[in-house]
Length: 391
Image (tube, rainbow, N blue to C red; front, side, top):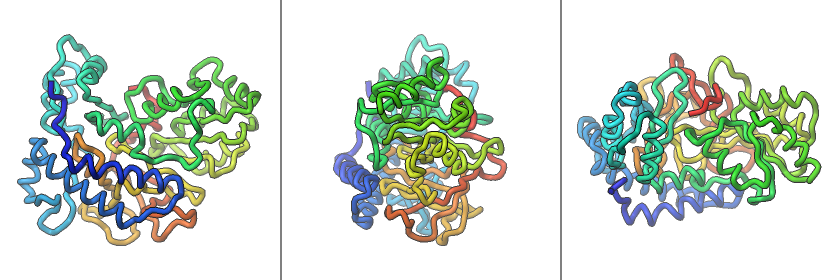
């Protein structure tokens, strides 16, 4: 069995200092932005060269566009892929032609699984691939084709650790309760995050548990901090169930994620302010996070309301012709993620953002996105937070 092509020695050398830098940064400690930027760029070049040799569809496209070995086009701009890259399969394969889906993974990524016998649906197919150390995350794709993101062990480790990013007030294992506002399972990134929080908690419950609100009351009695984690839409449900002020113990926090970008959504900052009031928490401990199914880290809001881009990745803002905008103007978001070892981490999203024009007053270094992330006009409404669906 050869589930994935081997990563290079250079990759193994570059990853640890980049992840450690992200960890220092998220704890508010000083970093050398130039040094981490150099590591990030070197790792992105290394991944590009390896993936040229290992991903057939990537090599063909790069050849058609005259992309060089540094990942640049003839104009010197970085090579970027549409977020349709991991949606380029026939959706019918998930129901009737699972062997074709297995073959497709080998075309668009570095993983090389054997097609498992006796699988009847997407769920059993994914479970069988996990036994070959190929971990396929499914995006929500609320009204469109879902991304199938194949991770090898190294990319999965980056996802599970958020590529080194930590909330500066993260709570030690066993010293908090967790109220999880996600569906059960781990098909999506936000579900995987919830599972990790739940495993390390002293007490954990999902919002649909009959005694979910009792966890909040029990934690208050024990003076045990609580992490409330899930999508904005499910936080709305929780606040409606609570219905009144319910102070939580010192150290508690509310963390939302999964997106809330469609017309059915609202202003996340207003929602977090309501959570801060209901649970009597410092506003700085009620945050939102941004990520995508293909991304292996998170962007967390600060008290200034900006999403902070960790130094492990770089973001670009693109104009209508998909060329980088060199000013602080708004445009389509692209993310360069060098910790995507099993698939190209240079994807254009369908989200519209604005870069922060200056250094954030909160003191964290690096790029920031202003609040108000929106879906591209005409793009389907997507995100785990839109529906709270189980995958």
